[in-house]
Image 1 (cartoon, chains in turn green, yellow):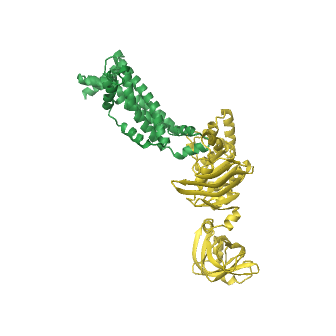
Image 2 (cartoon, chains in turn purple, red):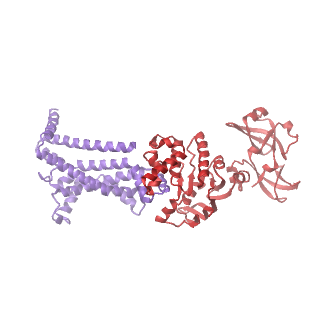
Image 3 (cartoon, helix red, strand yellow):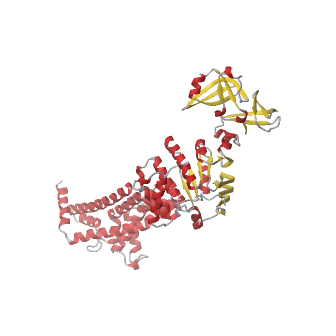
Length: 232
Length: 361
């Protein structure tokens, strides 16, 4: 119990001390998460929409792949990412390994199936006759799809929350391709692992609380937006 | 150009199953055609094909004289934007009433100033001028359907398709909206096709009625023609001609044809030949009940039968009485008449109906 209370105190102090190292870690965490979620949305939302709106050969197979990848272990993505991005790998010439860019790449690979899968589910949940109604009022196919996306916007926002949550919480992938290098590729999750290994349990838990605080704040903001969309 | 829509040899199949087979169907400019048929007859499919929301499998479809059945892409959109469909469920989009009514104008990229003006006028037409900023979630069923109607009217379509738009409403709202839609269509001169399974609705809203059975139009004509001279036995049953009998023409007398039905001679107006097997129909509303003792008194009704009351069914303000004489004859009378005549099960009663009320199907 004392440890937990001390962890709370430590978490508070971490934030109010404005330690540059701590804030560098927090900023990198937010930066990588935001970029990965944004890229994941740009790729994942159209995939989800296409799977819901179009019938084509291989659609069922792709949908199965998307659903399977939603539960993909982060360490597997990290290991595969390392093999591809390492100096000896096919994309080694890009020199991304142990760089924040490599962390973004693997986080995008984790985010896309989550965002695509939930977007597909939201779009599939919209009454298909709504699209017919839109077209009967003169909408083109694309306009009708945009209309359905507006109807499903609460679900699509939830897809983004899921993507964000998946990206910020997973440690395995970013640890492997980022290397957890101090001042360069260290983020909250990798630093927590580092502190646990060094026996700094209270600090590790404190950083975990900071991470939770970030997740809660961003999730609350997203949820408010979702609720407002649902009420409109 | 008087005909707005013309279909010939138009068919639609799903996975090899033929669900629509329209040999000929047309709608004149400004006319409201009611397509009447039971569930599963293909009414909704017909509307979707005519409004270009679904392609026909084969056949020809003309819109204002131009062939449109094979149009695709942008060309199809340009033509279909001159039509609009109203569904049974209004399918209002999230947002306000005004946003919904403006939808059709927005997808046509009209300027905001013009869209708001036209939307306001459309809402006035349907009696919802105060509802612009209301969220659609707060609307009742009747209000939602009026918003859908305003949303359709605002784009000034040349043809409107209505797919049982009143079916989800309660009786009071339904009859009120039927009258209003009829008035709006007449005032605006919009050509309309609406489908329904309700005969009263078809008669109330339609200028002409087409009967659709198993994907085929079996009859098209005025409400008088369809309800009193149905072309097929199934159509006759569907439009409420409950009394249908098989008989044989036995002769003619004083301009009337005599048909024998289970030993009873009925007199009707027709030109059929002696010995011909016929099917005769009679609407329950045309059967008058009289006390048995008054059956022989003078009347203009050529047919007079006596029989035993075997069934009485209360249907709101009317009563459905079944009399065996010896074949069952159904009569529709008012509750007051039932009380005045002391109609009870097991009692004998007289039936009268005119020669002109009988129809050979």
